[in-house]
Length: 222
Image 1 (cartoon, helix red, strand yellow):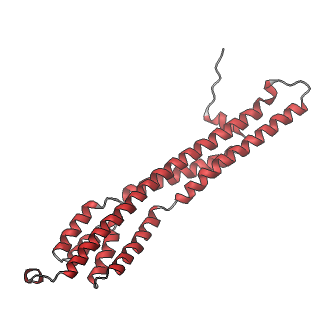
Image 2 (cartoon, one colour):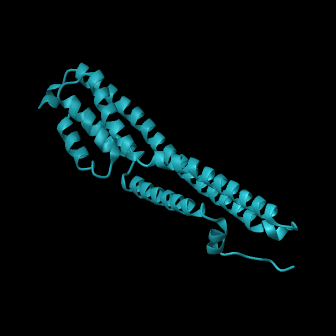
Image 3 (tube, rainbow, N blue to C red):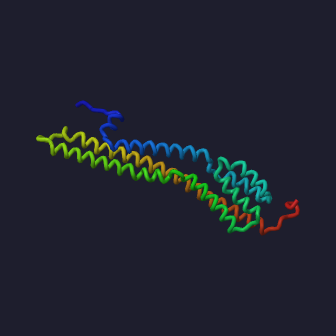
């Protein structure tokens, strides 16, 4: 029995008109996934290394040194921007509530930037299978129309309609799966960063509070 194989172009043609929006959705999903991957890789989200260095500056009550250190990292380190907001707030006079507010404001800005495009992935993950199912309905309508117009019913008459129905469904589901996998991975990365920010900033706020509660020694004052 001869096996029939089809190229992607053949499958696209057999899928009917609904393959065009599915093609647009697939391009959008891939573009967003690639853009977010590059963005997340460019903005190093590691926090423990710079937190340790800032902690050393705070231990020596050198807030200006900490601010200068962090300022040189803000271009590619999201965590540096958040810690810089904390250090600058502490330099002006420490208040635990105000320090937390400064951290929350900057962290929210950074996280919103990291999550840009996530809503589109969610929307495309929902729209793609729905569009595929719409193609399924269209294909089945065509199949039943062929049956109604034929004097004798055989598999070949309804084949085109069934092809369209199955192909659009498969492509819609594939696009949705890719979109949801990308969204889940990116969300996990951002959530992990947010948790690290909360933990590290809480530790620094406690350290700064202890510094303000403890008078500076003569050696430190010098």
